[in-house]
Amino acid sequence: FSHFGFSKTTLTEIADDLSMSRQLFLYYFHDKNNLIAAVIERLIGEFHGITETRLLEARTVADGLTGLLDVRKEFILKYSLLAIQAERLDVAKNPHLQTIITRSFRKSMGLVSGLLDRGIAAGEVRELNTRKTAKTILQAIAAYDHCLSFKNGLPQKDALENIHRSKKELITLIVNGLRK
Image (cartoon, rainbow, N blue to C red):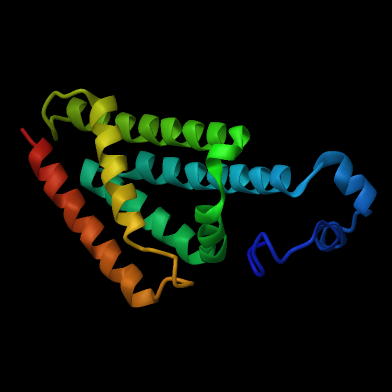
């Protein structure tokens, strides 16, 4: 998938890559949509694992949020072809994908909320509703990600860098607004 995308990779090719028979492979993944959902779920799990480590290692809220942005950028660069095709998936028609995305957003909210809780405890930021603030921060970051428009193919590295820089400036503004 990461080389040729969802639409140009057949189940037979994937089974061959995994050294499995097509029949055995189809036992686990009845159709391509289930396989795509499983791949997306695995990548999201990997993303959250790396993000959680970065946030726990962060000394400040700003460092943690910048780390989150860096992980997002790394994943966009590494899996840009999948990101392009994932944007084209009709999530509304796939309840399993809807569940995966909802769970992912909640997990991200929990991670950022935990970072904000630590910032409050350290006296770095003022008292606030950390869940609501985490949701707002993640929605703002997602809005910037939509600026990356994959409609014209793979994102250009300079455009990605510009948007990444803008997101870091946004994080600086947010963190400054949260300080005591």
